[in-house]
Image 1: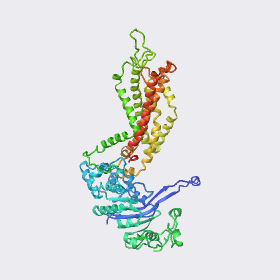
Image 2: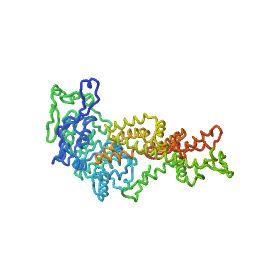
Image 3: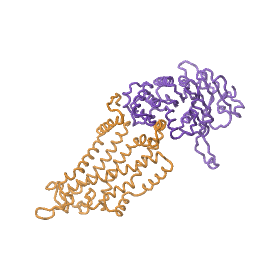
Amino acid sequence: MAPLVVASGLEKHFPVTRRLGEVLRGERPVSRAVDGIDLTIGEGETVGLLGESGCGKTTTGRLLLKLTRPTAGTIRFDGGDLADLAGAALKRFRREVQLVFQNPFDAINPRFTVFRALREPLQNAGVPKEEHPERMRVAMHRVRLPDVEGYYDRYPHQLSGGQLQRVVLARALVLEPRFIVADEPVSMLDVSVRAGILNVMRDVHATMGLTAVYISHDFALVRYVCARTVVMYLGKMVEDGPSAEVVARPLHPYTRALVQAVPVPRVDQSREPLPIKGSLSAAQAQVGGCRFRDRCPYAFARCADEEPPMREVAPGHRAACHLL
Amino acid sequence: MPVTAEPSAVRGGGRGRFAAVGRAFALVRRDPFATAGVLIYTVFLTIAIFADQLATHDPNQILYRPNGRVASNLPPFAQHILGTTNLGRDIYSQLVYGARSALIVGITAAFAVVMIGTLVGLVAGFFRGFVDMVMMRIADVALGIPFLPFVIVLSSFLEPSMWNVVIGMALVVWPSTSRVIRSQVLSLRERTFVEAARVTGSSPFRILFVHIAPNVLPLSFVYGSIAVGWAILTEASVSFLGFGGGDTVSWGSMLQNAYASQALSRGWYHWFVPPGVCIILVVVAGFFVSRGFEEVLFPRLRD
């Protein structure tokens, strides 16, 4: 599988509000949203980016689409460095990558009909006008809204969440992109329509051979849609492997806790208490060593001194822990 | 909420546009205040357009009785619908021509205010940074200028004319509009659909004028319809204070003449009540319409 997206040493820091002492000492504290990610995504691969709120998964997604500038590190898309993209090359890149948003209720201009929303990417990309109707029709069929005419004249507020997310997906697909980032695509939707959307995404992936990154905090979703799972913790990757492997044999203590936290639809099941405690905010302050150490049940001296590197444990299955 | 889709026969660029206009009218009819406002505007607009046909006399002409004496202070409903002034001018004709100058002033001033205010607000809010800072500091200065005295000073520098009010409005009143537009833009530019537009390859220019501007236009209209009333009120005040245009008949100058001729103490109500009522009606209509606009142009409030 030829690599399509290659991120190396990717970092993104956000400035945080400075306290008086920090201002006086000239310090510029930052929040390290993404702190050294090395990720290679092959053409046609589906990768789930998993982690709890604030672990940097959304920022990573935005970085991969050049929606925000990395503090350090490089991203190569199809061999070209994203930092160098400008003008016509940037325009071409915009045609090839798309983003599906978490909140479909706000992702379409409220004054735009479905027709205008779908047509806009085509107009921006300079697709000849004659091709518009056919391309739009194909995209709508892909997201299983075959009653094309019935939707074109509707405004976003006249559609349900599930329909809206399909339209958002159709808008992303109308340019036939090669790479798509879906940021929590179903988390705002009613549980009853989630499966529908996810099936659409699976189909789309299968028929279009699309490379995709799904950002989610939901293990079940990632496992259902993605062949590969990447687990992030505080701006770092902690585990990376085939989804089935990661779920069946989680290597990292954090992944193990995540797998254990997945709800099982059985009322009478007794559940082990989660092995980890605390929250991200407490861990944010520590620098150096393993970031997970103060929540980790197995932490020992080395964890505080040395940052564990990603280590390949099984073929294609890597994790960052000193115990491996 | 209309869920049933009507497959429209129109395809291409103009689709849905007529439906929006139709919806606007339907909603205006549902809101009695907006209906009243539109009705008042329509009546005065008709009067202003057909003033030449509606007026029975030249508003500035001094009329004479058959016996050769000035036809002054005639009571209403005799030969003259609203009687005559103390100098023998037809009050009804003045009122009709007054509507014309009032609406000309009101509409041009509102247009100028809305254009300037909206453009400044859009650019400042969207591009932020230095542009924003410079524009908002200018707005601060303009906000600090007392409006009516400014117009009076303006008319002493320029020729006294009703256009001074328009110039004054354009120079001093735009900041309140641009402030509101700017704050709206600041919130809109963070919305997901704006980022979506960027992802689909829209240029900043397109994002500003295609995605953001239509979403702030309702506010512009609200401020526009309020500005119409305000301009008319200011024109009346300026004329009443004696700084209006010399020959232009306006409701304000009618009041000024009535006041100077002691019409109030002599109880010549037919002289000063009609222009007063007209001013109130037009100003109030502006507020009614702006109220209706809010519901027409933010359709989600209704659905």
